[in-house]
Length: 257
Image (cartoon, rainbow, N blue to C red; front, top):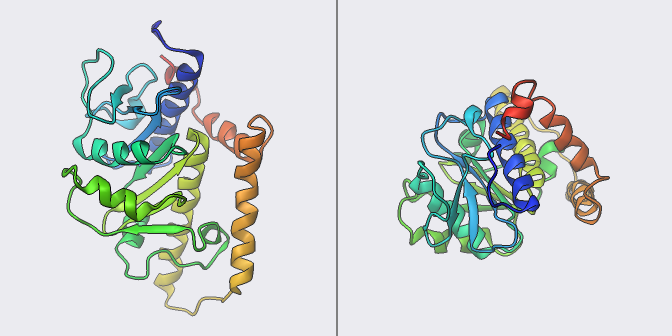
């Protein structure tokens, strides 16, 4: 990675964010050059990092990420710009939620399918119970190019939800760091894929009591809470590190270039 005037914390966030982009590509979750993952610049509530528009996710590097303010000003010299809809969505959430260290927004086929269903995400398996009574919804307003939509996005997300289904559009998750937001999105994608599969059978769903669904959601949250207390020794950290190791050479190092 070329030497820049970045703190160690910013360098680490950049490396994690670049890895997340490459993992999205590796797992087949990308939508060409569209969709976005952002991370707040450490120590700067009003600045975040976003992918260079027009670059495939597999090619995003730590140094190519664009540093931009919530007001739209690009902070560092770069030959790149950012996607306008991406700016609308991510600036809204980073500007409103202190806990939004990272925001992941994807258009996977399963995620878009579930977002298009009137029922939304159905609690029917272990993956989906993580999101039991913990999903917010935002109605489709067209491609997110109107900055006035930011206020409605933030209102629908609310002060505590970490998962937002953009109806007829896709999925969004947020976390205090890249690992938390990415793994939440991966689990959401698994829940959506499973839902499309079981709904296609037309067979009845095995019902689980509400208290068991809530208990399971809390079990998932224990991992996140432990990660916040001790990020070096949590199952979330173990999973994130294992996923990053899937970026086999030369990708394992080139995302830092």
